[in-house]
Image (spheres, protein in one colour):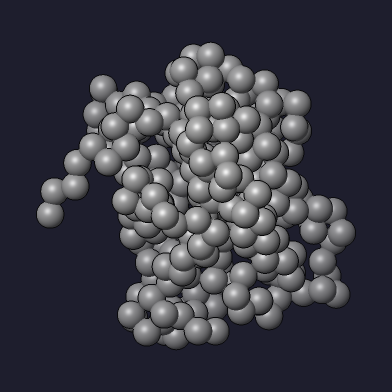
Length: 252
Ligand code: NAD
């Protein structure tokens, strides 16, 4: 099946775009004609991701930046610069995220803050910085990476599911608030996906989790990116406020 030019002329920002699900989203958006600015946690990793994509296709209009996502002033300046460089911003994929599995007894309060700062506050900061430009042009779309744990919770590492419940709350609330400005806001809730986040789990746990997936395997980053593409495109022009599960029907 050939799907072509779904995002032709669009400018997209993808946070956490250097590897895993984010990298797959960046590649998918580029394949469909978008200009993409990817964010990484460091300039070197952002540039390495850009270089990797240019090895695949030297003509890809892809750029790498590393703003401090928990610092609103820095984020606001970065979006201002992106609009100055590329003219507009049409799609924001808030994908950067970290997880942890400490029990409540061992959970360090500063680690709880770290999860919230990236998984929740960065999403707020980037959305707040991008939305005025989208409102000005009368359209735009924000897609957040949630997780299946935003539905089921998780038996350890409570900060991570708490952050993803907050992602869903922001998604549904911003969809209601920004609809009048032509801005759609949705979230994708992946199940277990084959990225560094999965390989960092203890093998016994990763095997147990995979065994419980009705489709019999973890998802691939590209399978998650396909849903981002749909939501970013005009095919989803009446979809907003949705939390779309992409998890092989996992129930935990
Ligand atoms: P990953 O660890 O492969 O990638 C994480 C990305 O976030 C990287 O690009 C990294 O640069 C960025 N990042 C990490 N810390 C950062 C920081 N302090 N500042 C800026 N950027 C930072 O993980 P992934 O599996 O691709 O996860 C991407 C998203 O998908 C996350 O929001 C995660 O919660 C979610 N998710 C993953 C899975 C899974 O099984 N892999 C399942 C459900 C949801």
